[in-house]
Length: 69
Image (cartoon, rainbow, N blue to C red; front, side):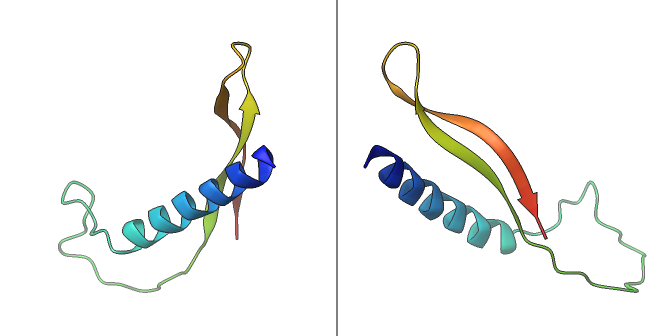
């Protein structure tokens, strides 16, 4: 049950993060002001975390793996 709740929370947080990052603008420090776009690519990915019980008995998020396509 705890694992299902943690998975649900992670899914909601990941979806919210994806939406906000998709709307973000390119920072001026890395923007190509005089460049010409030659291609545009779409990629999707996520960082997977697991909710585990720590040594103190409390739940905590532990990084498991990144995934991308």
